[in-house]
Length: 167
Image (cartoon, rainbow, N blue to C red):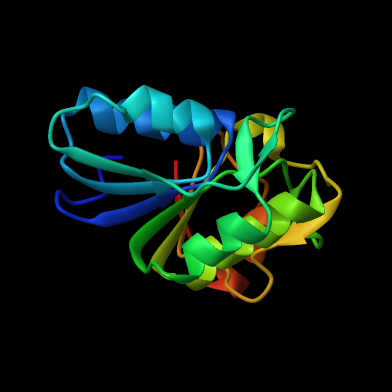
């Protein structure tokens, strides 16, 4: 959150870690525009002064409290972002970044394609896990923000992708 400058246009995908990023932005009284497909993030930020929050619309995915599908994709295609903060379900070598649903994967990939800078926010529990659907294959993240130390193999993998690790 501290690396996102005030006034930026930011996309936040769904997830527990991206919700924490939203809370950190709120706590630092960050000002700018947030576009999200996450219902919990939209509610968390809805009354924050200086923030403009846009919720994508779409079909509710109750398990993840997100919006996805054709309406979500149509809205995302109309926006471009300075930063995208992406949550993932798993990070493994060589599988890369994964999420639990094909519908969520399509949303994450579209957000990343429309962002100048892509940040994956993932805590240590995501490493070594492989979920159902690959994401960020075409658009590797610029930054990986995490709370844990990474194995040498994982660090080399991210170096090959050109992803900077922020621990």
